[in-house]
Length: 168
Image 1 (tube, rainbow, N blue to C red):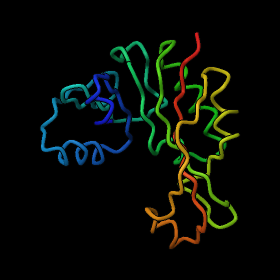
Image 2 (image 1 turned 60 degrees about the horizontal axis):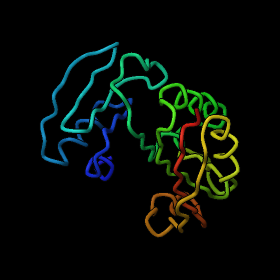
Image 3 (image 1 turned 135 degrees about the vertical axis):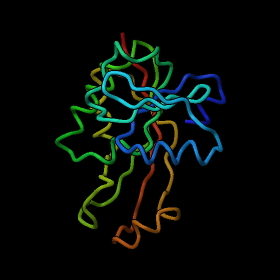
Image 4 (image 1 turned 30 degrees about the horizontal axis):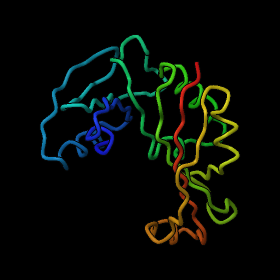
């Protein structure tokens, strides 16, 4: 999120845990502005605004204009049956021609049950292509930085970065 904000994007995030939002701002040494809007606690500083609450309850009309969306751990936190609802909500929230930076993980699901859940590339395409152009911009071995998953039995971890561009 910081990387996007540093490049001029207005970043709006959603997080269920208010503690996680507080830690995000504390790590950067900033005190966010706090307000309540549409049933959410909204914390913001400069170009980053984080909405604390149920992502699926977000109303596009209550949000400021969105330039970009970053998903580092939301999709992979959801079981398969919730993922289509998530993809549809992202499409509902984003205006056309806006972009999502999405990080997906893939591993052998016989080795570990999520979360994080494995999201192979074909699954990302199936979930998002009805509403987005899906481009893979990076694929790397993520196992070296995932000791917690190695301890759970994962022997291969592919980390894929996508740019999703909202179709008209």
